[in-house]
Length: 279
Image 1 (cartoon, rainbow, N blue to C red):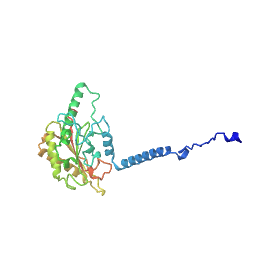
Image 2: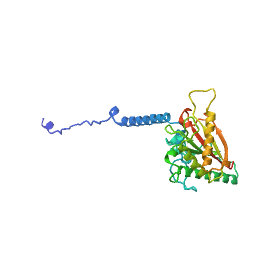
Image 3: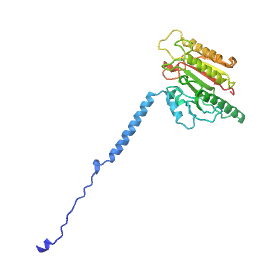
Image 4: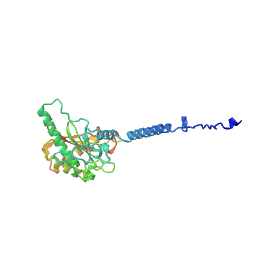
């Protein structure tokens, strides 16, 4: 008994480790990552559904470092102190926005040319981009008012510099169903005439209209689109453009919509093309 009373007392404590198995927190981190990814995915799906093809193209061009970004403002080293301002209606509600002055669907190509031809193409492109920069205000203030800029997008293609002047849901460029221009249209035409005076390139004018839901035996859109193109010619000439530089007038009716919805007001537009003189 005496020996047992002197024996040391040993106390064993069982170590309990918390957070083991399915009671841990690691799965919560993984689940949070999954939820975040799904939220981003559904937001992307919503954006794809809520934007037009041209808007998506403009956004893609904006984030592409190899493509000139068409914006209302920006910097550059062009002759007029600005850089590219070609735009797509896609990117901004104002039309000039994410601007998108971007290279068009048929970008200028200089391959398969001699050094002299390549230099001529480069000179043409530089001159057209300078005009675009002055028009859109890439180096500072634009020549046109903010209200006018809402109606304008530009792009550079093999044809030359294409300037679109188009309707907005709350602002038309012509009185409805007529070839009578609104004052904002005359303002834009006068500024374009002054800009075009810095080069000698020929000019082409095309009229476009939105489709109507009511079909008629004779489509009035042909005559109206041509009448609007002719009216734009008069406005440019009134602004000082040499009539001999008008190379062609065309009325495309409602056959070449600018957006997927052929009845959208955005399809009511005038395209003024400052044609390249090297082709």
